[in-house]
Amino acid sequence: MKLVSYIARYTRKGLIPELRLVSVNEQSVCFKYRDYADKHSEKVMTLSCKEFLRRYLQHVLPKGFMRIRHYGFLANACCKRTLALIKGQEPNLCKVKKKKAEAASPPSHWPCEVLKIGVLRFNERVNSSEETMK
Image 1 (cartoon, helix red, strand yellow):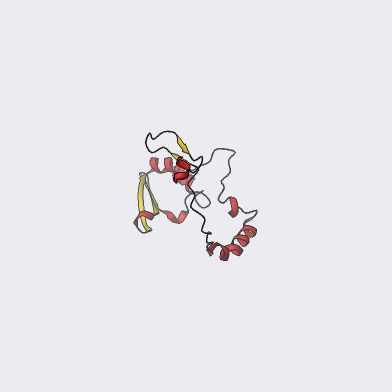
Image 2 (spheres, helix red, strand yellow):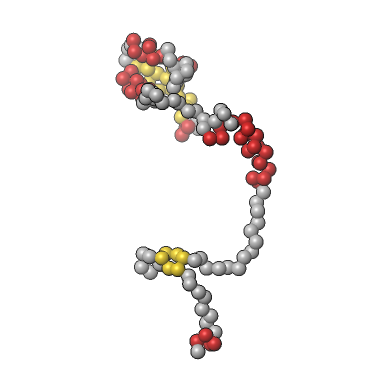
């Protein structure tokens, strides 16, 4: 029980907010969670103290590591600049460019349909007219 009380002090800035903890006693810990498979409904889960601590400690980072909440275009260093750039390009994202109708050309290579191994390559087109047959 002392260990659960000790860890509970760090829930405010930690992995589980204090508001989600429903009850704690000698045998179990009850907390709220959101079940996304059931239309985002809020449910209460009861776990033994041992199982709760096991799950909680799986999320504790090793010494020297730092938790990163956002990276890429959402990183704190460039968030405002990149989001403004993305929002400025939104109207351009909706435009669909129509491709010019090109003459149908066969692919340059494709898998062999008979042997199911190897690759067939297109070298040249042969006309079936009588002139090429002579």
